[in-house]
Image 1 (cartoon, rainbow, N blue to C red):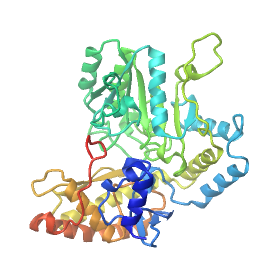
Image 2: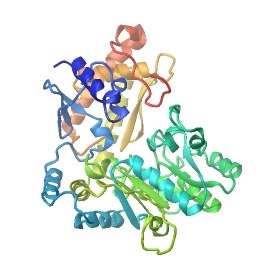
Image 3: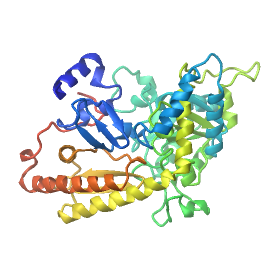
Image 4: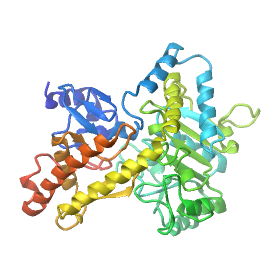
Length: 451
């Protein structure tokens, strides 16, 4: 069956053609596989048997590798135990205690299936704890939740009451004065500040010494942006929340919060916790987390989260095994090493083709990102589409760059060869016009108001 027929069936059965918009047709060039059948290690196959080296890695959720036998066996053993029982399970307790032992800021934990569930739960706790209503988030961080409190703050406002949209306020990452202005403007009304520890931009001053295991200057008492946010929250009675959906179990085994030596009041994890299995977690200070408990007799309750499948044994077994592998194989160190080699290699190829001002890899080695620019050096989705299109022709699926332990030297060599071919076309398109080379509609932003 052809790509177009699979696409038609997907859109007939599923709104958007997939269960997250990041997998939609509008996020990929036309020559991308419309549907995938399986993944092994760092490779994926479509139903026609076409093989691709993958850098999407399950929307960053797979950090060991697709179909890892150890993780699969751990999952199987939990399924044989019954997978989902009537009371809390020993697996659930072991997973909770493992997260508490691993992440210094976590004194209690609540598991769920989706990141959106736990970020919204964190906000609910913050409002209950403080008695305030506003939440502040950085405008530079793209996604926190599919719930109204966040989506209403994006251009996608349809179906969301104005009252909800007004409760989310924006500041600028690495600009503490922009947050302080919000605290002044909404004095005594801000319940929480939620942000990622780092994204393409980190919180540290340029002179901080950062290595694989953490920022040396932060560890020795140096101040970064996260510390400033924490102090602003403490001064104004707001809950300091770090969302580690992307950085967690990638930046550092104990979280990017440990890498940058900061301890949030609440923190959320998901994505790579369980090598692609559905686990998310909200954790933090006991005095805040236990508001969602049932032991404080006579106290007004907070209905925090209540999910039938939040403590599914198979996924929590995957989490336990994933942490074991991360520790045993020093996977986080591999991410940094491989990523730094990838960044250096790709940027060197761009320089070889004389297009280093139009194409470059930026960000941290553990989570790099490529930037595409046109002849005028303006950021260009058309050229991003072209690059992705040409990489697919070389058998590499690179909508963005997410690393796994299954990306090894062979995969690095394949990638750099593909980049060399793709950037050769990119350079020609800059000289001769992109319309002569792009055979696909331009990919679109996920957060746009109109289709």
